[in-house]
Length: 246
Image (cartoon, rainbow, N blue to C red; front, side, top):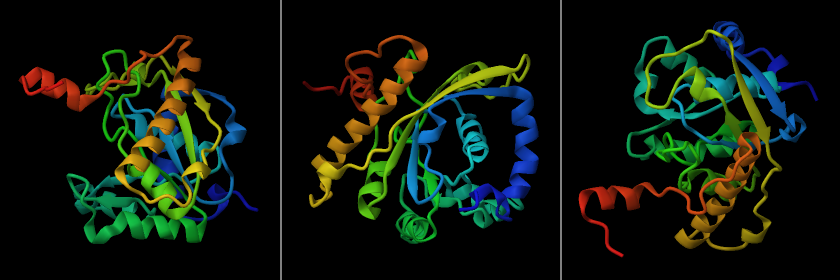
């Protein structure tokens, strides 16, 4: 089957704009690139600790032969030219607070399966707040899409993006050229959850498996162990505001 990136699409325009800048600023060192499926629909779930992560991961996906699609804030689709490019390239609008316009993520996920496409979903939902940049507690969106549509999730971890753009920074440091280390994990099919209802307990259990897989990949890249307990933003927020109980 012909590589997705060789098929004419608006992605060619985006690649022409983005890739030259990425290539100047970044070199990739990828482990287990063969584990990224070259055909069929799946969810790609990376760790997240820099505002520039989507560009770095999107460019990597393109280099590995897959067209990157993300769930993006609905507000950016209203920006002239950019909004047109986002819509034409199949990006998925999500309203602030996670409420999807017209249940678009569900519809988009169905289209992904029908067309054999991939979508990139950050399971943490935002930049990690762990002080040492380890993955924090995940949200269930990525797992819900995979379980509802019967498609696998491919965990992926990267390290080095913080040198290009530190967490919470608005400033990019492209020179000298940065090395981004990437490791791709085995696809997770979640066969053990098939036939179970998608209740909160099931989604949380499956999400924990996904976060463990991403954390394990990052441990390999960093050559160190993550904390035994994953950072939980809600617990720390409660402690800071004096509302934590138990």
